[in-house]
Image (tube, rainbow, N blue to C red; front, side, top):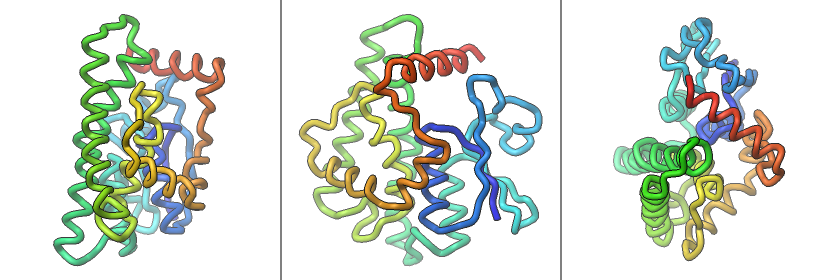
Length: 226
């Protein structure tokens, strides 16, 4: 049994999708990021960095795992699922996992901040992060022209890591136009039943509705001030 502390963000969905794909029993505890729950003393005892997601493995002495990529690796290695064991194949999957952790996540995250949340609009900064996010998408698209999934023929934690970020491309103001392979891959993963379940924990806000979009931006702006 696991407890997942999470919120409706791409990194949070990486963990819930993985738990659903691996059919693991877990309780989901939603963290209110706008109120600063993630900075409370009880939560930083689980994740010293005060970020979501965080996972507690009750079967292993309440072992705590933080950082979304580390959670994916921990679950995959513990269960033997969604990560090849052959060294080269495993390395390929881990490389594309790290591509998300070190590239797509940080760059698209900054695109989100400066495009949506930052009180001052700085066009050169917005363009810089949007362009870099688009470049990284093009790297993914080129890879997916060669294979159905990022690690090759099989769906792995590398796909789980990248998918929620690509799914949220429009929130960062980045287009998928001309990236047919990436679009095909995104659509196929979105249709997976476990992915649909993972995206409901917690439910995704409909950011196409103005009131939800405004609330989301206001919550993010509060977090920037912390």
